[in-house]
Image (cartoon, rainbow, N blue to C red; front, side, top):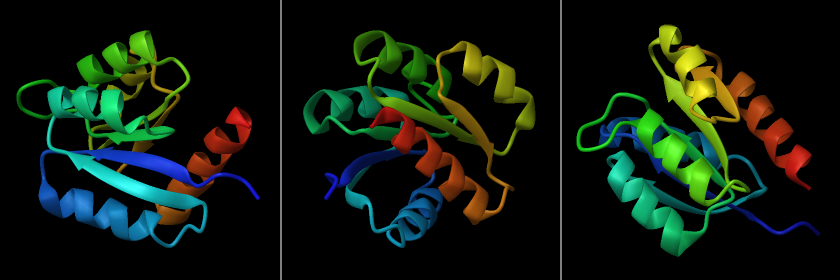
Length: 124
């Protein structure tokens, strides 16, 4: 049996984090889930929690998701980062920052789970 996936959800809106958490909790491969409210908190949590996967919003206070993505991928290249954003125009910048994937928040939840499964399976 494969090891459960540790996930870090990064969004400045608690409601958004709870929604993503609820979606991920339906996926049997997900184990522990942690949350952060900005990119700075995310980096601190990646250091201690060592997630396999980070799901991050772009626009947040303190440190945005793009800066956090660059830092995470520079320090922990094995950590998969998926940028979730309402703003599709952030797609190219997110991928240039090192994100493994970009998902528009408006996309269906099945599409998000499919992308996550593909990223995690590629890791194994």
